[in-house]
Amino acid sequence: MGFFTVLVYILISFFLGYILIGLSLNLIDLTVLLENLEKQMLFDFSFRLVVGLLGFLIILFCLRYLQLIFIRLRKEKSITFDSPQGRISITLSAVEEMLKKTLDEREEISHIRPKVIVGKKEIEVIIRSNLALEVNLFELTKEIQEKVKEKLQYLLGEEKEIKVKIEIRRVVGKGKKGKEEEKYPEVPFRNY
Image (cartoon, rainbow, N blue to C red; front, side, top):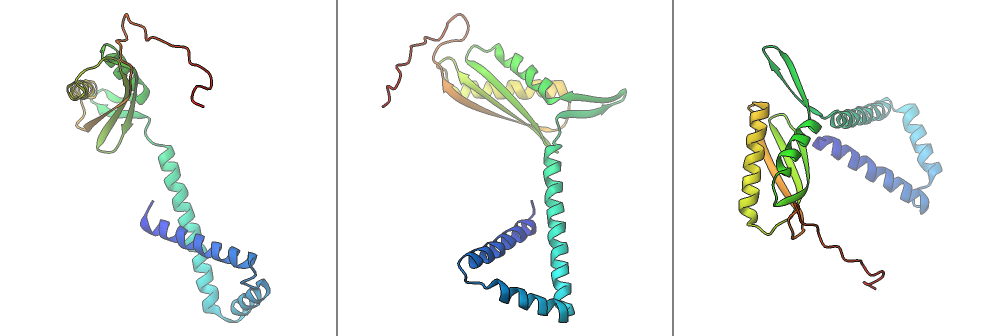
């Protein structure tokens, strides 16, 4: 949203808020306000022109805001590129599944949830997971980032920049393969 759109919405909100508070506290007399507006609207052409242009400007800003909302809703849900044989389209969910299967092989992480966001010049990958083993986080995340970046560049073959972010949600402590997490029954109301 542009600076002027935000500025107009803020000014309109303050103005309407001021009028409503003034009316509720009897600081503004509605009959006097309406009489002044009626005099100005009947006899002053420039005032009517300014009010009309202001209303037109507000409608334009509202339409622009709606356009921005619809553009965000139509955000790309696939990666498309052209080849000599035709257009190729890969959905983001397919890319996310491929990344999940690739990272599921790793024993150090579990509960992997990748999310792919496509921009104009870059592809952003956010990988949320749990740490299943105690390992060097710097080395692990670096390896995962390189592997994901390499896999996407191989898959897509595009010139877009690929950014990989990793979020470790929690540390489970035991490996996910062959070892089950110990589950202790929780005592009700133990924190009270």
